[in-house]
Length: 468
Image (cartoon, rainbow, N blue to C red; front, side):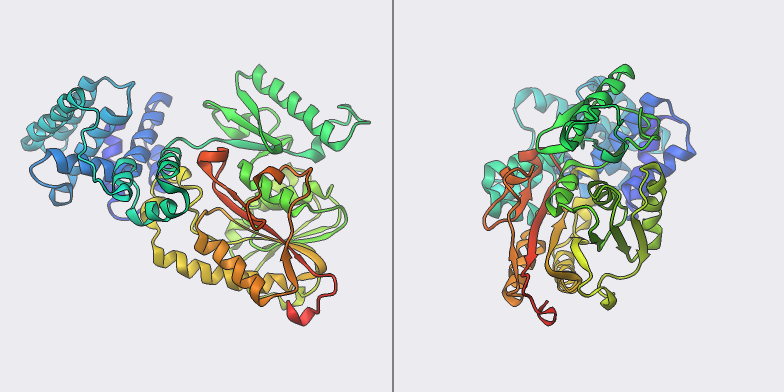
């Protein structure tokens, strides 16, 4: 099967509303491709979906009919050819044109092959004549949305908070391939590695050992600033479960900013800690590790199928202090005043992780975000009742949208005077990331981590349980 033909199949399927990652996985399972063709197929499908606003703007500029009025197959062929010409330098322009024209003929569009050829060659000519083929709007929001392929409402949101220059940088960052980070499991550190040293020094020794193991397998991994247990892979690493130390439980995949959330929670040995929306369990297992596999971690999630991955990881990571419970965190009144610490990694729009899902930017709406904010406020109010007087709650989301973050926390603090924001200690890896009035907002273009919001709340020791 030709990889570009498979791309056309995928794009047709995605027109019906299917999810990009599901379609890609299904077609790669069904059709056998070489490693090179698999990579090209994945890049083309994800890239075309990610950049479709820009590609359609180019089509509107060059074609007699705008993209939305063209036959669907013609529109997809033009997107395929233009994506290669604009974004894939490694593919010669002649190859991009010729393979797209051949694809038109092979799919019963011989009559349109000349149109495809003409538009693609017109783009090549204009590329040599001007720095930008597109006629971009003078309105900065529309310009950035068209240039980087994002909906205007989303660009406007970032623009209001960051201004034009940083919004431009953020859009570019969201269009780059995501990094793959790992978290070292502090419980499986070789006892012979600096056995008498501090836990921090032992983690550094284990990190050095892992880097050397990866190097021996021709894999590069580098330390990550602010993330004591983190390493970042550089380049292609292949199948994760075949890498050195994975099956032994020495490390697990987790993005850097997600690791920082657990450090903000700072769970201590022998405590009772509740992870309110635990699946798929990356932060849950990190909590258990930081507690030294002591005390008890209650991992709650309303979707049993999403908890399966957590259950599968417990043995590999050698963790025994986690109890997995299926249920809705808007309930569980029996947990009132039981926890030393609660982590509420709330369901959110995921707008801080748009680089990880090509189609996410097109599937979210402002109305959905407002609905999520209502759920987040409800979850925060309920899970706060689980915390003992003097205890801690960390609220976190993988979005940078104020409606889901600041606008959830501030009303909560106003109606719950027995809670206050607590800054991380000066020796915390997060101390340099704190913003006023005390929360932490991670931006992909600034910190090179998934976009995240997190804040640590402390309940007053003298708090009355009825006021939580």
